[in-house]
Length: 237
Picture 1: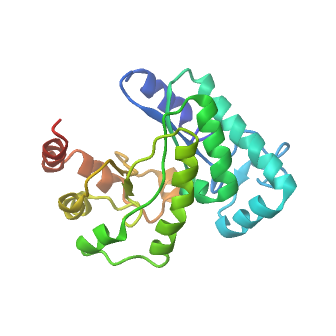
Picture 2: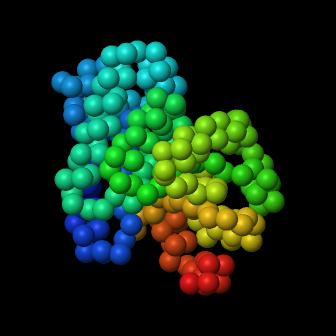
Picture 3: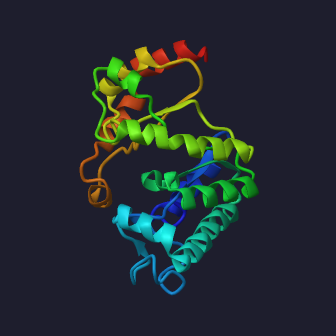
């Protein structure tokens, strides 16, 4: 999130970890813009904030030429802001998986290809795996999985790599130790991404942005020796 409150701190930390692969998390809903209201009058409020109205926003991104022009300018600005950090761009994804929207997705893919990113996230979580974990599908999850196929094809056609499956959607904000223990025995063959939102503590900002999430529990899971040992065993690392 290049316009996020902690962006400068995140960049400084990344520079101290040259082996860390850093990606761009495009923000086009529920977050701060780079260009602000003067350049994005149809997309953000006076404070430069994208609203949380994801569905209605998606319709505007699709049907309004003015919104699409502003959207393209903001995506270009976010890629430019990342480039200005001097960090190598490893991968691209989007807040709230907004790049599943065909207009956003095509712009994100084009930007990623121009910027030299190797990968883009395709948020496709196999429902049969979740069923094996004892987690029934959430409403619309199967439809979302099917819809993600267009993004996979478009990304691959642009020369971007994609993972075979992504986990973390069903338990978003709650990838704690128990969730990892349920999931890992059922990880299928191929390349999987498991994403989390870890934090060492939950301050007022996190409570405002992620009121129902457990970032500390997710952080503790990543530090759990049992989880680390199981991942090393699975990957041969």
